[in-house]
Length: 119
Image 1: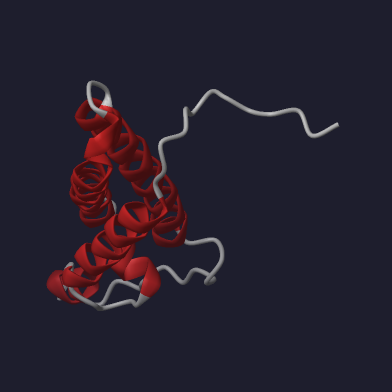
Image 2: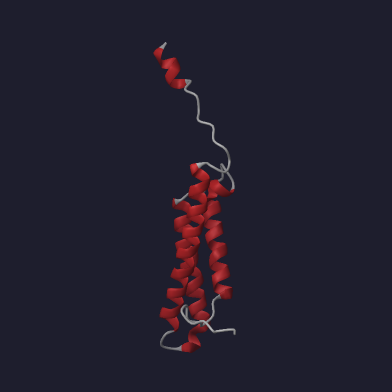
């Protein structure tokens, strides 16, 4: 009789916006994206710092680095469960690969600290 209460314990009900899973998913997505972008940018600068003609190679390395960094953080923080509850970690890897492709296409030889005054 004492086992019945153990196996039939009521589950905590939480709303969709206040769940720890949602918070971790959002936080994991933001951290993974930032880690991917910064890691890709650093990889690009390392490849192209001595020879500016290595732009294509730098972009490819940046994309691969972005995909690896973002995927790792996405999988660890269960971003796939935030996006589609019950999905496998492959969804997180897919998101990381999409970030890597975007980084490959969008990265340019611009310093992170340089900004121009538009006034």
